[in-house]
Image (cartoon, rainbow, N blue to C red; front, top):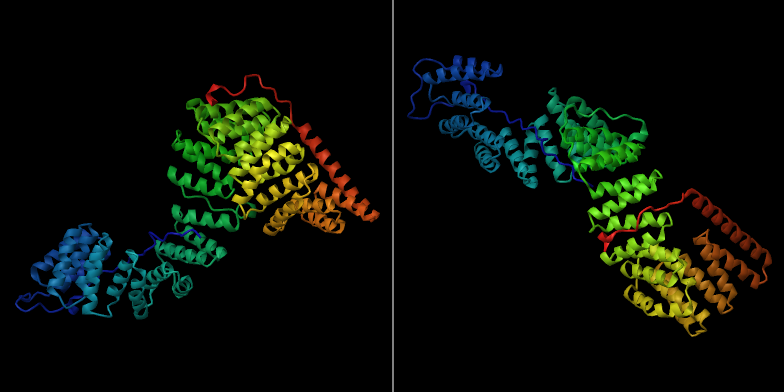
Length: 614
C-alpha cells in the first residue's frame, strides 16, 4: 500500500498562556513592585486589542503598562504574544525569556518560548523547553501537548504518544485528540486512532475541520474502508475547495472504488492549478484508465508549458485511449514540426498503423530508428510493422540488425525467427527461436513458436540441435518447458530416425516436465504419442484425454485421441473425437481467412532499412 503522507495536517494550535494580572506571580525578591498603579487596566486593554487583531495598538498599550510595572511577568508574556503576531520573532523570544526570568517556577514562559521555537522549526530546542515546563508543572496540558507534538515532528512517535496520551487523559479536546490520532496512525494503530477521532466534534473553523476529515479519511483508507474514505475526503474538499492535496486524494480513492464507469461524478478540480499539479492529476487519471478525465489536465499543462515533451506525449496517449486518435496524430505532427523526437515518431507510427495508414506508419517507425539507433524497442516495432504486412525482406533486415545490435534481446531473435518461418526457412527459424529460448526460457512466444516448428525439421536438423536442447534442460532444471523441449526432440528422433533406445530418455524428460507443470498440455500430448509408439493404447488415451482437458482447442489432441480409440476398436468414441478435430480445423481456417482479408496489400515504395542500422 502506498504510504499517504500526513505532512501539513498538524493543527499546531499551541495557545500562548496569557496570565491575568491577579494570577501573576509576585515580583521576585529585590525587584521593586509598582508604587500604586495597578497594571490591570493596561493589560486588559492590550488583551482586548490583541483579540481584535490590533497587534500594533496592543503593543503600545503593553509598553505603556510596562513603564509602570517593568517586572510584571503577565505583561511581558502578553508582549511576546503581540510580537509573535507581528512576526517579530526575536523580540517575542526576548519577551518570553523575560517571563522565565521573572517567573522561573512557572511553566508559562517555557511553554510559550517552546511554542515559538516549534513554529520556526527549532523542534529540538522546543522539546527541551517543554520538558522544563513539565519539570515545574508535571500535569501542564500545554507542555504535554507541545512535547508530544514536537517529538512527533522529529518522527519519535513511540515517545511522543506517551505525552499525548497523558494530555488526552487530562483534557480530551479537539487539538489533543487530533494530535494523538496522528501519532497513533504513524505507529500503525489506525483502529485506536479512529476511536479517538470518533469522540471529537469537528471544529467550526473550516480549515481545521478540513484537516480533521482528511485525517479521518486517511485512517479509513488504512483499514481498507475505501467508501468511507471517499465520503470523508469529499467533506474535506467541500470545506477546502482550493486544496489540491485533498482533491488529489479524493480523485485517487474515487478512481479505486468508482471511476468513470460508475456514473458518479467527481467534483471539479480546484481552479488555478499550477502546471505541475495539472500534470500530476493527468498522470493519476491516465494510470487508472480514466483518459477522458486526464485529457483536460494535460491540455492545461501544455498551454502553460508548450515545449513540454512529456506532457505532449502523455496527452497524445490520452487522446488515443479516449477514442480520439486523430487529435493525437495532429498533436504529434505539430510537435514534430518544431522538434524531432524518436519517441513521438514511434508513437505516431503505431497510431498510423491503427488507422490503416501503413506507409505513414513505417515511415515514422524508420524515423524513430534513425533518431535513436540505440533503442531496442524502435527496431522491434519497425521489424514487427514489416512482418505484420508480409514484407519479409525488410522485416528480416530490421530483425537481423536488431539481433546484432541487441544480441541479448529474446524478442529480436523471436521476430527474426518468425520471418524465417514465414519464408519457410525452417532451420534458420529454429536457430533463432532456440537462441531466444536460451536467452529467456520462460518466453511464451518463443516456446509456442518452437512447439509449432519442430515437426517441420528433418531428423538430421533436429540431431544438430540436440546438444543445445540438452544444455538448456540442464541449465534450467526447474523450468518445465526446458525439460519438455528436450524430451520432445528425443521422442521425435526415436520415432523418425529409428532410435528406440531414446524412448526411455524421452519419457523421463516428459514426465519431469509434467511434474514441474501439471498444466502443460503439450507434454501430455507428446507422452501420449510415446505410449502409442509402444502400443500402450490405454495409457495413450489417458494422456490424450488430459491434453484436451487442459486445452479444449488442441486439434492434434483430438486427432490422436480419435485414432487411438480406433486402435482400441471404440469406434463411436473415435468418431466423436475426429469430428471435433475436423470442427476445430474448419474454425481455424475460417479465422485465418477473415484475418487475411482484413490485411490490405502493403507495398513499400522505398528501399529497406538504410545504412544507419548497420
